[in-house]
Amino acid sequence: MDGVTPNRLRAGALAWLLTLQFFVVEAIAAARFDGSYSYVDDVISDLGTSASVAAQLMNASFVLQAALILTGALLLRPALPGLSGRVAPVLLELAAAGVLMVGVFPSDGHSALHATGAVLHLVCGGLGLIALAYSVRPRSEAVGTTLALLGLVGIAMTVFFIAGVTEYLGEGGTERAAAYVIPLGLALTGGALWRLAGPRSSSHPASARQTAREQARAERAERAHQRDEALEAAARRKAAEADRPADEQDDDAEDPWAPPRRRAD
Image 1 (cartoon, helix red, strand yellow):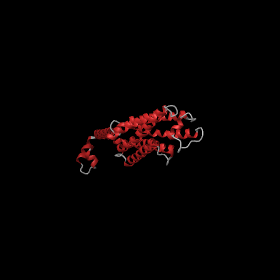
Image 2 (image 1 turned 180 degrees about the vertical axis):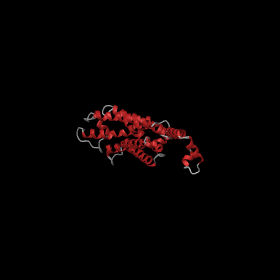
Image 3 (image 1 turned 90 degrees about the horizontal axis):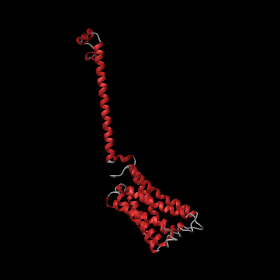
Image 4 (image 1 turned 90 degrees about the vertical axis):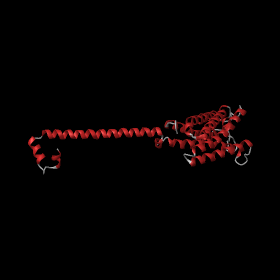
């Protein structure tokens, strides 16, 4: 966690949480599709073609997805320890580049570039989740295991989709099984890292040092207050002693039966 402020951690985590916007925009584009649209038989890219009423919205969502993935990878890079923590951001940056190509080059006008971007996004996104799993697992075994499973499912479904093995889930269903795991995994990681920016983030060395300094200042202030009160009390006793008649002072000093307070004065 060195080099990562809580605000930077929250910003990166929020970027990955917002990748879930893809599901909202996809549902809107599918509902507005000209004619029937099937999540099982039709691929995601069809929603960004000229046959889709919401093509511009869908392609904008692809571009936004690229920006969110890239932003999270850059901001959270220092929060991901180990070799896997250095590999994961690189893979996710490539995945971001892939989905950017998907949004900029629709399949009905730039099929080769679109397909290249789609494969780059799916392959690097799945591998990026597996790398994230190894980096996050020391903090949360449950999150790490879930990310590893999502990454493996994504890679397997990508292989099936490219190889044309789609008779079980359909072409659209197979592609979605490969693609959906990426925003789901990133949102899960973002949520897990967001918790590190909460109250328990005070365990960070810089925060701990600041807390210790504040406690030391408070203790010094309390000791100074107590010292001032003791000095003021002593001054009041001396003033009261000086105001008393001299014969009473002598009598008290010689009287063995005088109250303890008066003898102390």
